[in-house]
Image 1 (cartoon, rainbow, N blue to C red):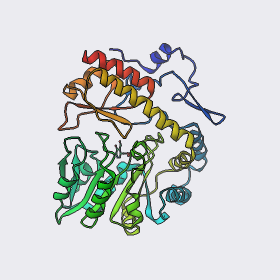
Image 2: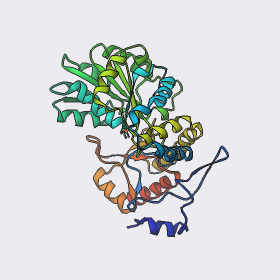
Image 3: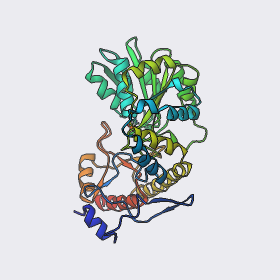
Image 4: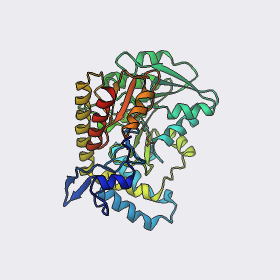
Length: 373
Ligand SMILES: Cc1ncc(COP(=O)(O)O)c(C=O)c1O
């Protein structure tokens, strides 16, 4: 076992008595410096299992959160106007189209509850991010899970064939979790347009910022065209705010109004201040993407060395075929101090690994080589 607690780790890293480096990211006079010192493991483990961005929050966002405490005695709904306006401007929609939430998981839950409860049907890929389906099923919804195609991309034709008069929502996670794939941009647009006349199309764009294909379309354009489409975005990924809990949905006014009846749309004062500062911090945004690319390339190199099949990703994680049942790989990697993704049936020999910090990825790479040798 090479698991460290925080104190042991600090000692090993020569940092006892100082915690000057925060997540290895510092902005000094507008330019970015990074440290080679890894962030401390949590409960003795490096977390590469939840697609977090461990460089966040950026220093300016931290400052904004601290300032936000001055307003922490206030209910936030009266103070979210500036953020909503910033989001509306960024997405090219009106403020009425924005539904703030406490992260996309909340948005997914609320949408399933609003539109599919009591026998409504949802169509989604398999495997995919399950939040909407898991939650809505508790309230009587039924989920049709449609297998991905051979390239582990959403099978849009097969999904279209499953639509029936009872279909309430088509959930499209694009880029997809856990595979990291995207569907062809033109096919995506055609699919969403034609399906939106039959049911509500929910495009989960949590990882949109990481897409490497130039000019890839966001389905926000269909919301602007007043179609029956919801797009959700989150501050959890590229902005590094997963623990702060803030995100938003964008939809036609009547849909947004209906969702807002169920979403408290409160979030909290600190999250609102954090999100505003994050949207203005272009340096950190660029930095997050650049670091993600470095980590991805390091993972690819290791998987190439090990001759393992993997998917070139449009996200902050890589999905690869380990050749081992994932539950036993998880256990062995844990023994090496690295937490990796859980099983994604039916692909139980595939492993999802988050990009994490560069130093963490190096540790993952060496652990994987040891475990699989
Ligand atoms: C596709 C997808 N959507 C939504 C979420 C949830 O994000 P949030 O932290 O905003 O709840 C995740 C989290 O990993 C995700 O992978």
